[in-house]
Amino acid sequence: MANIMLTDICNLRCPYCFANEFVNKSANEISIENFKRALDFIATEPNAKLGLIGGEPTIHTQFAELLKIVISDPRYKDVVLFTNGVKFEEFANELSHPKFHILLNCNSPKDIGQKAFDKMVANLDLMVNKYYMDDRVTLGINIYKPDFDFDYILELLKKYNFQRVRMSITVPNTSEKRDFNVKDYFSSIKPRFKEFIYATLSNDIMPTYDCNKMPTCVLTEKEMMEFNELITKRQRDREMRRLPPLPMPHVSSAINTDVVNCAPVVDIRQDLTAVRCFGLSDCTKVKISDFKSLPDLRNYYMNEIDHYAFKFGIDNECENCYRRKTLRCTGACIAFKIAEILDYKKKHGSYIKGVRDEK
Image (cartoon, rainbow, N blue to C red):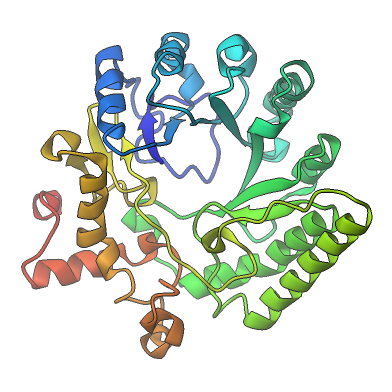
């Protein structure tokens, strides 16, 4: 998948925002012309999946027109809208088209306020009960502090009988906010995280990682085996009740595997520059016009960034880690070690174009 960032504006102020380098810094939004150019570029990858992101993408002043362009484009069969759901009802006719899947960033009312939360829930109800989109809606939770609230999302998952939930442990996306011990960060989140896993699985809901998977030096093999036993138990129970099995995610997204890595997402900005992902938005900007295709751009990021991901750990224990040596674990998100990667590249004469000037 590759994403197009439609606007920098958002109608919420989430405390963890992963796109805080851009969001609400200006009223910048993509033009129709640039949107079409971005679509052309992404379509250079066969069967490419498209993501529409922001800010809050529904804030774009020509959002309905952008949706119609995508609907009429035969190159795109699967389109994911990343949204907080507050404005869904204004574009329900377009978004109910079978091409669209909704990833609803489901924030706690404690973070976004009860009014915005109630509006989001009302729109979720529209998606499920009026437009019958329940199989094309996924709720997501962003985990950003040790005592994160999840009761609200568990209630919604149960109410609408969703059998999966997307989760992401947030990563600061600017260098000055990454100055902390990464293992301590994960360890502080782990107790409540495990409670969330047990609560969802016990209710026949499969939790899957979106990104920033917890490494096995924090979440141990024994604990993952316990997750696996619970999954097996729930699957057997569903089989006995003649229910379909819970959806099993890809190994890299599963809670019960030790594979901890990722691949370039590619987020295209309004000015047709791209970044590898928002976690690395401050140091991986390039022009898509410098590349012949989306696969070429992905390979560029693989060569210039991802190639080094396994070379640098998050602490000294990573040096002799078998999983790191065998390319099973990068030691969490690359954003946590990007400063070391860039420093190494500068010292050895290999660097991303423009990084030296930006520094």
